[in-house]
Length: 381
Image (cartoon, rainbow, N blue to C red; front, side, top):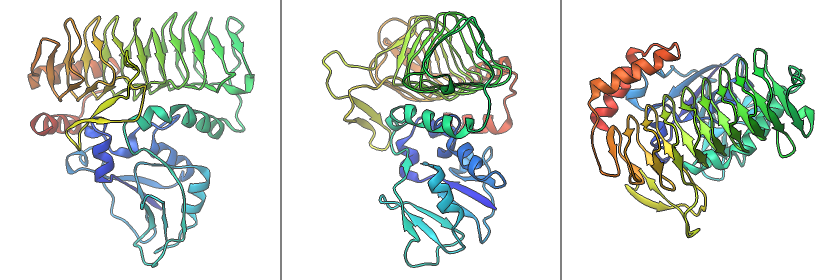
């Protein structure tokens, strides 16, 4: 069977700038992405994406068949939802209270088979607001019936041992791990250095490095090959990014191929405790969120120099280079270079050379599709 994960235009725009470079279904959701979780429930299925034309060169669509499941890419699967979706026959469909539809083939029935309340991303803050819940749910799902590697005697565990899972190849020594408030998952071939503090729920993906003395607090979710240090709370890294030195991040989302220099800090709470406004791409203005906590939202391929300071709820578009004293404005458009003193346009060939070199440091070669997407964004975003 096939599953096609569709980008709803209004959802994709609500999740910008992170969805400039990926389909909605490749957003992180617990231990993995939304698409990976659908693949978990349907291991034999071919997963394809229906997204923006300029992204299809990297994330190709697929010709649907009579029994193809068409699913909005922002809906996060649960065992219950997957079971109902698997039972759909061609022509049948499921509805959500918000009007979203999961359809098998072409919708033929006049009314949905059932109406289900689903978990989904509908705004940028949903990504970090749901982090703890999603990690806990995936931990139970992915570790059921499996045995963790033993915790070395050099480590200290506080809380239930069955809430800790260490994959094969992980190197964990001298760490302090607290599972009382939620599980801690450590992915294969990751390194947790001495004097690291992990307070669950936390998910650390494959081939990550958590540097000595780091403090990772509840809700932290590290994608593949992320390297971190300092104090991090309720923050999601999509993968292949660095924040290796001291400095605070909280209630934040960091894209792929980003680098935060030594001493970078980002506020997640205003001094007057007032409601946070966040840049809205659909509205092209700062919009109220109803939130008191919101930190840095940074798209792919961004860099921040040493001691860079970010105001509460700063949104950074893809391809930016932030540096200099003072606070840059809380919205920085794509491919900007500068800081509090002002911005100029990034020179594309220099940007591409930096991106290529950073990817090589992770043994990843930039593809023609990557270049095409970045060139399109430079010309149009």
